[in-house]
Image 1: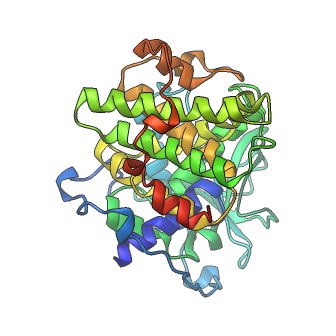
Image 2: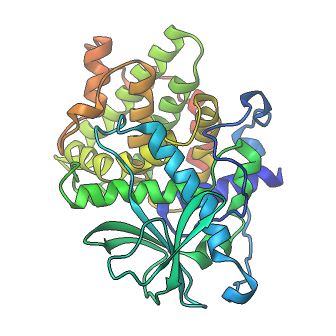
Length: 370
């Protein structure tokens, strides 16, 4: 139970980028571990979320080796980028990454700085560039390094939290790997290399009814992804798209669908990337089954989460069905419409004809206060 608690909290860091976990693991970088060792099945009723208090860590370079911490992290990123080989988005994801410590003023980078102030070190065969470079940045951000966009991540936030236990739960890379890849997509969006979308939550979408509707769609998409039977998968897809259609049709906001699609591009693509790159298919399925409880635990307007989770789920499902979609992504693309065209859906199921209990309707409605 404790592991499930930590996993749900960890997803908080992955999606809203509020905190991040670190690892001093020095094993050889691998994309996945033994899929047969995944944890037992869990249900929403079994997951209980509580607060975890974390003491702040003060770090000084004389009692902490930043270079030895950074080396395996850089090696893992390099391995993932090499394995992808530009396949996901038609371009290399290799980027400069700088880990900086606000206590000691030291920084570690995977590439040299233009000024030549950082000193090269070979740490177990990994190039690390070390030196004193005081930086005043947020937890993780993108900026310029050697005249090109780079990702900056604060060491204290990589260490000062409990989220690293995710590695023990789904046998994969630590959360910071996901955060870096999430931000790589964001800076490619800002640079115009990938479409950016709207960058905002759907205006006018908040209501308890809409929040329940968002959860029904998300849960139906998850069931479609993990379904073993093709007919069962199609049923869940059809119901997810029907719920979506009803929400967009009944909304007082005439362009709700346009805004949702824009948010999916803005935040769904980075979230899709951070999850799909390091995880195997089985690890991914296990992870997404924890999302509904996490979303409810956050206690926010669920429309703020929809683009992150919904966008990632639509991308994962399109991949599972063998539908080519990434080369055609644009600011106004509708990923749901790609599913409609692929499956030949010509009508949407009325809400009262969908068994919403299979998606946890009563429990979700109770928790959202309906």
